[in-house]
Length: 293
Image (cartoon, rainbow, N blue to C red; front, side, top):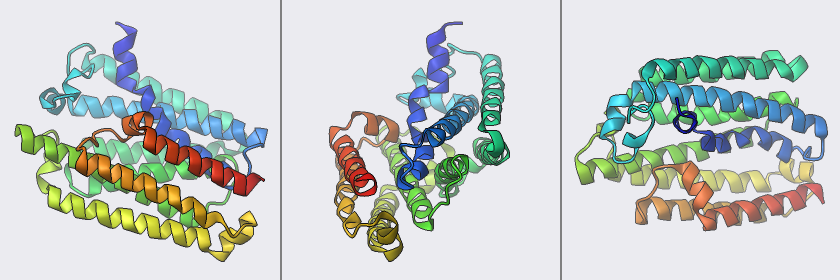
């Protein structure tokens, strides 16, 4: 068995999503705390292994649909480079690796394992049945990002503000609906149904949904930055300036989704679009300046 198909199956490039576990540490001003880095890194790899396990199960369940997809047909299972039996073995091994990694968290092992298991249960249910239901499917995906955030908070014993939890869920929801829009475009252009619930979506609904969620996210973020609690905790009245980059990033993603019609993989967009990368970099630098200097 060649290594490259296995790597493609577990999708390590998607591990960038698990960087959400570091957000509580960043916002809490603990970026120079070695213990927090150690604990958050453990949570990062625990979620990386468990999310890769879910990708294996998802590809097993979607093997027939992936064979009809213009790009997913090259995936290891859909193309026949990896057998279903071997994919199940990888799935089980990754779960074991994730739970073992959780055990390295010391006194917070129980909390991290509970979050990882909740993520596993929710996503197994998603792969087996819930992905067939429109709207519910993207809510489960978004809930997964909230769990990453909670794991990061548990690992460093950091209390999570309702604001950061809400915005994490909204941003994840925005990206998930943008991805569904890409599936609708493929259905209209090729006639191929890449997922069963895609018939319950159309461009008009998704365009309006993206606009609504994008607007709510921006308003929520601005309210967060001007709230007395945040200004007091960060000892600054200029947190609201960071909203410029949030607004620019969301508008750019809408442009890629609606104008360029290229929203298939949020991870690939984040890794390749220079405009969004610059927005994220400047946002992080300005926030770091406010929190740490």
